[in-house]
Amino acid sequence: MALKSEFSTTCPCCDATLVIDVNLRRIVRHETPVRGDRPELSDAQRILTEAAARREAVFQESFAAEKTRGDALSKRFEEALRQANTEPITKPTRDFDLD
Image 1: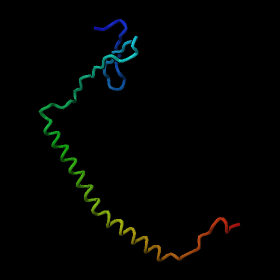
Image 2: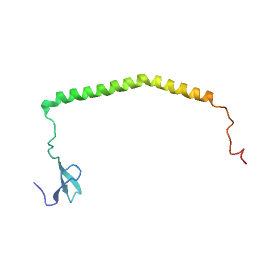
Image 3: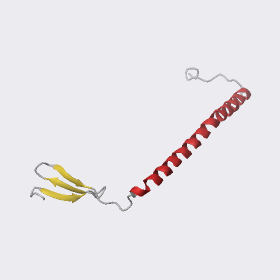
Image 4: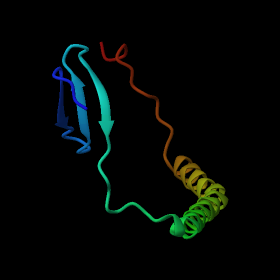
């Protein structure tokens, strides 16, 4: 039942049907379109199991990267220390000294 002050239009973003009341200057109804890719309720357990496995794999990968992070940082520190020991110590030039 549409009033004379109402009109419907399609949302350009989500293709939903919007019913707008001109007098109220508001959306009075919103009807979402039926999606064809909506999963079935019978597939819910499989989808949840796959999502849990994906989360666990990402966690294990992150855990392994964090375990080796300390070794990588210590190697980088040793390399920087070795490089600092081989370079001669020089007095830095200041802008004040150039005048």
